[in-house]
Amino acid sequence: MHEIHDFEALLKLEKWALYSALVGIVAGMGAVAFDLLTSACETFFLRILVNYSHEMLIENPSLEFRWYLLPFITGVGGLLSGLLVYGLAPEAGGHGVNAVIRSLHQLSGLIHRKVVLVKMLASAITIGSGGSAGKLGPVAQVSAGLSSWLAHMLRAIPYDRRIMVMCGVASGIGAMFRAPLGAAFFAIEVLYRRDFESEALIPAIISSIVAYTVYILFMGTESAFYVPRHEMPSVYNFPLYALLGVVTGFVAILYVRLFYGMRNLIFKNIPAPKALIPMIGGILTGIVGIFYPHILGTGYEWIELAILGRLSLDFMLILILTKMLTTSLTLGSGGSGGVFAPLLFIGAMIGGTFGALLQGFIPGTTSSISHFAIVGMASFFAAAAKVPLASIVMIVEMTRGYEMLVPTIIASVLAYVISGELTIYESQVLSKERSPFHTHLLIKRVLRHYKVESVMTTNYVAFKPYERVIDVIMKSIKVPYGVFPVIQGGRLVGAVIYGDLIKLISKETRMMPIVKVMKKNVPIICPNETLDKALDEMLSYGMNVVMVVDSISNMKLMGIVTRSNIMELLWRRSRRAS
Image 1 (cartoon, rainbow, N blue to C red):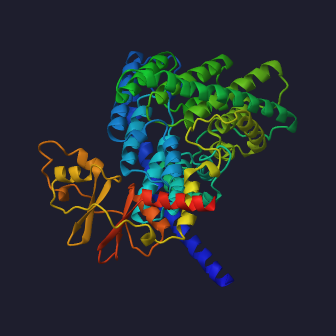
Image 2 (image 1 turned 180 degrees about the horizontal axis):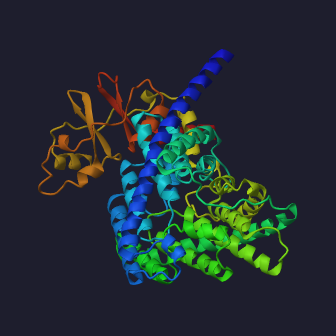
Image 3 (image 1 turned 45 degrees about the vertical axis):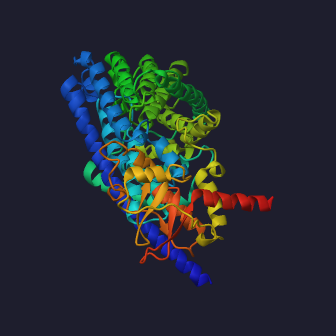
């Protein structure tokens, strides 16, 4: 018996080593493509059209650039992003990670392939044109979408697809931010405010390391930020880092409320098409950028200057407020981008301001502004995103400031606790017990005891390939389910969806045979299989019906199972139990 279990464990390990490596390769290449595309957009919009870059302003503080074009450029970026997102894939709007979390909770990681391209283009345009946003959300959603597609190609079951998507999140982030271990922790921690997905940790680490390797082959190995080496902070300064954690925790509460307040109270109430609203946010961001161009794009150069202690106290205070405002304008209006870079930016400025104030009031303090800026980044990210473990490891990896590990832990944990339940990722749930996916697992354990034939319906509505669209609509209008088998000679050849047919009732298409619009790839199952597999088939295809055939080779239609059939079975079982 032990030998059987050992063999099964070995097979599982080999499977996930392969799956994780494949995800890492695909996601690593996706991260490279997105990085290059964003750089190209930034070069075109800001360097060529506006004659501006952060590096140019750092080298020449009195830089003359075409400031009058900024609102136009950021507005055009918002417009293009809005048209792409709301015209093709609305789930690609906002900061990306929310959509991935929602998919992992509700759809077992199912992400439409078009989201990948739309998110990549829309986010590259938003960031490249000067929108106040970051790359983490987009690269996470792009990598997650690629992983979902790969899972579909490998015919992975929903449970495995979900883990592969988490591996994709870890891979994209670990590669782009050169923080493979922290990214793996982020992928398993970001789903919950007070929990994590431990079973995905090892696959996520493997895929993240592979993606990181792929990425650095093209983009180099330098760390995200240059940080001067310092001695480990004195234990006597630990209370100061604890106080910084308290400050970042309270500021995180303020920022999350501002972010969603502007979205819900202002942008959602603007009487304009959704596709145009990101343009309004972009224009307003550009107006602020005229006076403080430092807030445009990701702003990593200014984070580095804060870490190096080269920014004045009053200037860092201004950047905190303006970055909070412009990120809320860019992303709250529906622009496509991430919140990670803005969180790091704000956190670094809070830490730098805190350190500068301490040095002014307590000249003898041995901790540098650099230390406080690093700890500020980690603790603010931990508080706002509810990922304390990931924030600690990621910031240490990104800065290579390993001597800051203990102060970072102290501040991040305090900030995380103080910020309470507020989170920038509103799709997070409290714990696994609140996740629809894990509720679904409990249901599947029950359904495993029932055969498909025990609930299948033999009194179903079916159509032939050459029946007309209008006739099919009339016959199916009162049927409680919306997916109908198409049969020829008793064999299943496809299915038609009522919602698709309704779109075809114009004069030109109402007489069209349904063979031209039917789906040939449909969920199927055999009568002797268990109901948990039937539910998996429904979820995999996004349909509420699964077709029951005598065998995969013969495809003779025996009946159908609807989601209502399954729910009725569960209801009867719960009544008996009570």
